[in-house]
Length: 310
Ligand code: GLU
Image (cartoon, rainbow, N blue to C red):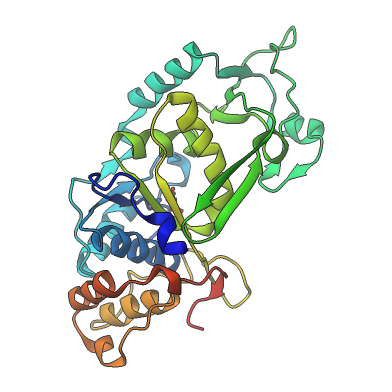
């Protein structure tokens, strides 16, 4: 059943997958899992695999982290098909897409501060406070625009995730009209990810399950823009011993000792439920990745977030 979901509806279309790390620190085990999963699932279909550096949120970017992530990936045996895309170099394109959304009547300026949104939120949503719609019909007199929001429709929408199965969400009650350009002028992740994936021809998004509930927002953006929606597969998250998502500091993959590359890849594959033969653990990383590409079983990927190393 799960195998059926990801089958490419247009057989002639080559799979294009991607890995999109944020350079807020070195590669950690949680991102390595996303890299391994997206790589194996693209390559097993003879697809392309791209890398995008999500350095949109300038204040959170750590100098040197992007280069470190790329060199770590290289040492682990990953090969990408095109030069990595950097979001920080694509501002003009995001602006262009915002204008298009504006022409279509999809966005509106909002004067509310974070605190005001919190205060006016009808109820807390799964994804933070739900926007109450204060500026939907126009900015109140005397106020100035701060951010730009996308108008979302009422009613639930369903998408089928290749691992988690059907996911239903009502955008209006779960998140409300959401921000595409923030008050500080930065473009929101939700906008950039859709524009970047679409422009790169990505048709298969494999990433951590922390983004499962962002996906309906992204699918709605595709609909507003009239662009084809990719397949989505969300991988279980690697947790630390306290049950929290692994942070950059804890699961750092960059500061590994010589000879550890293969073991790390094998651990990531095992985390994804793949039965890596024990004798392979000492093989060079390229060989382990090749094994992953040839033997990756989607049905074996667990849906539960788990403590890494268990
Ligand atoms: N940049 C995000 C992260 O590092 C991933 C975004 C995505 O894959 O859509 O968690």
